[in-house]
Structures are given as C-alpha cells and as structure tokens.
Length: 65
Image (cartoon, rainbow, N blue to C red; front, side, top):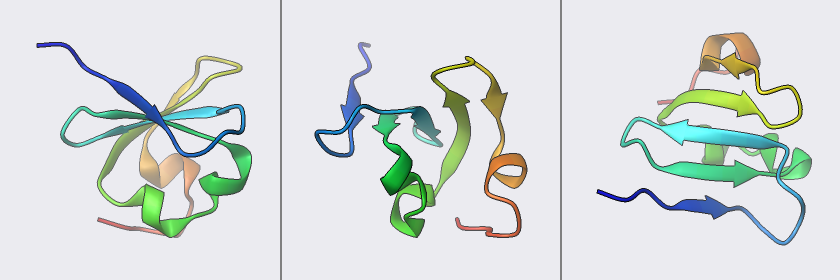
C-alpha cells in the first residue's frame, strides 16, 4: 500500500505531521499553530533537523484528539 503526503498550503512545509491513520501531512510554520491540524497526530517530524516528537512534547499543554 502506497502512502501519500499532502501539504497544508503553498508555503514550504517545515514539519511532517503523521496521523494515527499513518497519513503524512506537510505543515508550514503558520499552520503549525492551527488546532485543526493537530487532531489525531501520532508524531511530528521537524523537516530541518529530522527530529521526531510526540504531541505532548511539541504542542505543550494543548492536547487534541
């Protein structure tokens, strides 16, 4: 099964959000702040450093989904 990666807008993505259904979504700095994109995130990869973060690490006190 092939996975597709989507992007939030025309801006350069800075993060890769991987959701609980294993779908990938490239997120720019502006949309990173959007609660809508944070729903059901399994983990986040910083595309610059390639570091992997879990929602509690990268979103702080905001717990969504």
